[in-house]
Image 1 (tube, each protein chain N blue to C red):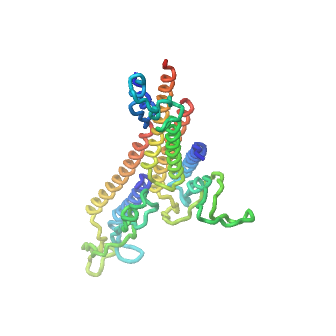
Image 2: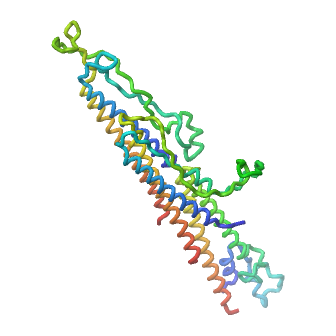
Length: 149
Length: 121
Length: 139
């Protein structure tokens, strides 16, 4: 696989991780949101990743494509942002304007600690993709170095 | 000096068998026709072996082939028809080396030719 | 004949570097406008135009369509070289952000890296062509 195509693959990873970061940041910002347009409290959102099936360009070696029916070199795609359907967090506070008849307030099912961990994971994955691009560039430069000497 | 081995060094692929026997005309009772090659001083092209001219022509044709292949590979890389950087770089290096090799061979062959043509006979 | 075609390859590599230079400008503009509301990013393509500058011999087993007018589309057979040109198109695709801009900064950075690698490669190959010519001249 030429180094040009692997940069595009890493770029799909960068986009996916950035979208994950945006989603996590949204979750953290809405940790106390009890009113949403659909009614009910804010529900935690998570990102669904899927492997991309068609690479944007053919591999350098046509045989590689023929031997790779799963197209394992195309990158990642975010196929959707779905709501986490686990039950709401119930907090007892009868004075809250959104308390239900029993005095419980339905709070979003967001655990800040878990969101922080997810954020670190997304950030590390982003850095790893950046490193992959830099390594691709270094390999290309080394190959071109053959012509210099 | 040993004439036969000097010629076979200059013209690759030519082997003049036993020319030492052919030069000892006064000693040998059976003087037959000189086995092919003695009349062909380097460059005349009439020997039975591969001549200077054909060798140089075939090497130039090989270099031309390699340069054309490498140029086509570079054009394909530029227009995006291929993504294989390694193949392009190795073909460029091979074309460069073939050209350098041919030029070095040409220089050495010319030097050897001039040296032989300066020899007193 | 056995012509060493220095001319065509050197010309094509020079055009490739020009194309990469134009592409760099467009991508840099996209990146600079990453926070501009309602910005539409531009795409640039020059590799197809570069491929068209190469005059082809055509497939010997293929018959070319006869063309009697300038407006007929030539299919098959040998193609003449077309002059090189860079095409820039404005992209209207999705990925709308809240501020209405459709720039994805990661994709633009990756394109920048790709384009820069491509320009570096073309430059190196061009330098090699010139060195080879110089060697042949100096003997």
